[in-house]
Length: 138
Image (cartoon, rainbow, N blue to C red):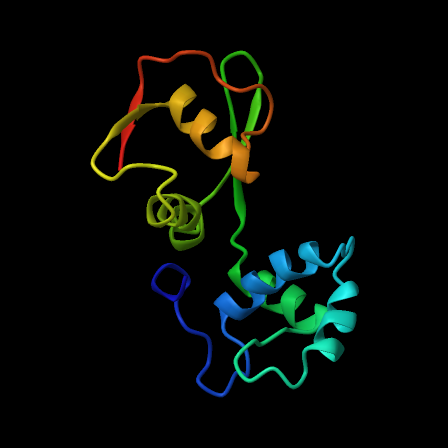
């Protein structure tokens, strides 16, 4: 994660990866909102290596990662928003490669790509694309 998102200030207690990893932990305890991280943080405060961020820290760090979205309007009037934070945009693909969900050096149509990553909760906005001649290579 650090390779894609970079490091925060050396004086920062939590890195980007700590904040990002706090979200699945929150989900695993049945947390519905970021404030549930306070409960998890209190329960795991003595854990030697697990760093759970406060909700405020997670919000602040994610705000640091945000970049302005660019709006593209197609000829048919459909709006698409794209975000140009390359490291953050490449992170899900890197995690899928590392976890074996996607195979390195393989070509995928957009349909195959979305079908591969949908089970882990990463879904496209709108309908899943149909079989497409466009391929992406990782």
